[in-house]
Amino acid sequence: MDRKFELGQKVVCSAYIKKSKNHYETLKDREECEFWAGGADEGVTVEDFHICDKFVTVPAPFKGIYVGTTILTTKILAEYHDPPYGGSGFRFSSEEPRPFAVVYFADNQKRLVPMDAIWSLEEMVMIEGGELDGGE
Image (cartoon, rainbow, N blue to C red; front, side, top):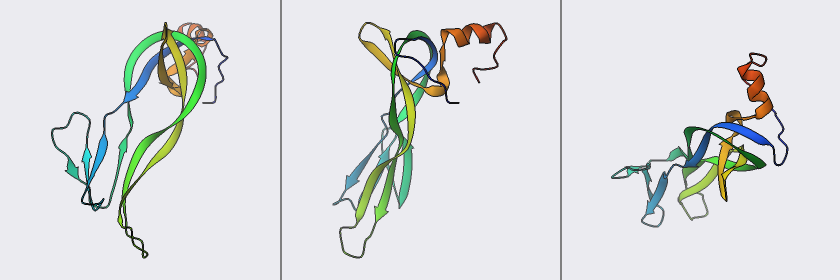
């Protein structure tokens, strides 16, 4: 779905994203790693490889003004490296870039919206009238 929105266009959104609070902690010079899920009381030991979500999607219908698009990576990868030249240990990287719409919904308050959760007001009128099937 490759839809374009114009700066200042009024939009309707069904969800937004927020940080998941998932994170990793390393111990003993990066030789050990623990994954901490958002809200967990204790970490889980990572053996060689682990990937987690950076964001969670919050279902919440709202209207706003589209001001742009940004690209964010949506996953964190923890992987153990043991190169032949030394410096072994866990390394971290960001994976899976995705576009998100930047939508202001109140004075100086914005949300990042997945592109499959945003529609123009014109699209919403067509969807409600049965002229358009799901914004596609």
